[in-house]
Image (tube, rainbow, N blue to C red; front, side, top):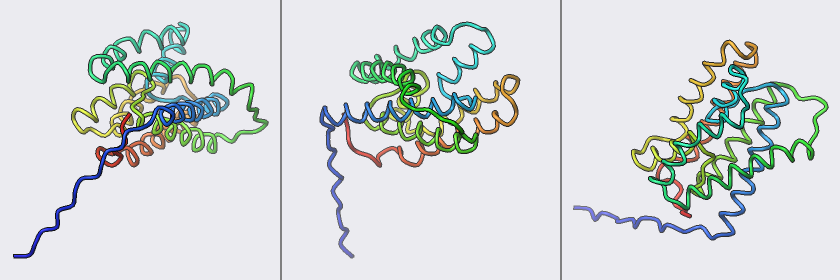
Length: 209
């Protein structure tokens, strides 16, 4: 009988504090720039922010109030299931995206922005930014928290779960957005979540924070 080669499991390397901080900084900057590009071309994002934005269009209630209320049960889930460190990181990430979203509009200006280009680049930036946060056990509130929990607990890929949620949100925007912007928003949601599904598979990335 032929001998079986035993391959030892890869060692899990813990992230250093500066690595977590750098990932959070770059990830939130990427997301803020992606959101700015989206806003300049009247596109709708997915996840909790997209749901809050859609509800603000319909109800005329301020976006920030809706976003805060929607996130409350998810922060409880993060604290109970994913730990206080993850929850604190998520609060910080949400605050940074909020801050950078305002500052980026002062730092960057566009004289012309093609909607198709905005969809591809904006969603690519958001997907890459989320990937940085996810790999350092940081979410961006709401659906991101639930996606990470389901992947870690049940092996459901975060990207595929978020894709389903995002498509449901975008489906609700049928009567709010112009048809071309709705189609581009759907394409953007696919790009964001395929980016996560391909690059954030369970067991593929073993660094921990």
